[in-house]
Structure formats: C-alpha cells, structure tokens
Image 1 (spheres, rainbow, N blue to C red):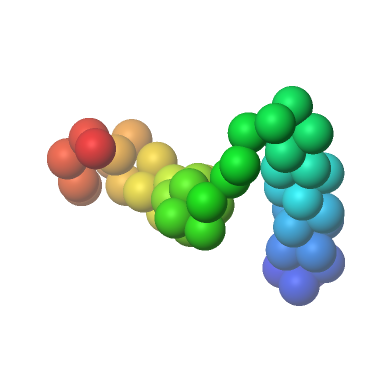
Image 2: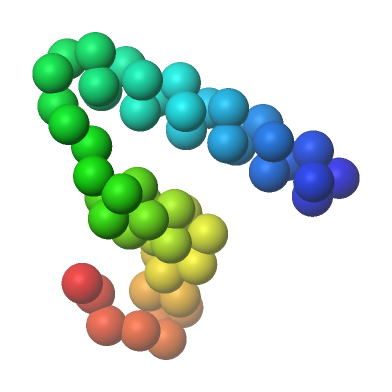
Length: 54
C-alpha cells in the first residue's frame, strides 16, 4: 500500500512541478527537497509541537 501511495504522490508532485515550470519558474533541487521533507515529516512534527517553525 505504501509503495503504491508513494508512486501516486510522486506523480502528483511531478505534475504540479511541471505546471510551475511551465509558468517560467525554475524550480531548484533544494526547493523540491524542502517541499518533500515538509510533506513527509516536518509539517506533522510542527503540528505535534516537536520542532520549531522554519
């Protein structure tokens, strides 16, 4: 189930980054890494009060 979910999430992210790229915004590797880390960890930890807001 998780492997399927990761594939679905990856496709959605790729589609959205393609949309952003098509507007002329050059997305950096650091921005993508930040977004994925936020999506899969930091936002939940912030919600729990386990980390500072960045």
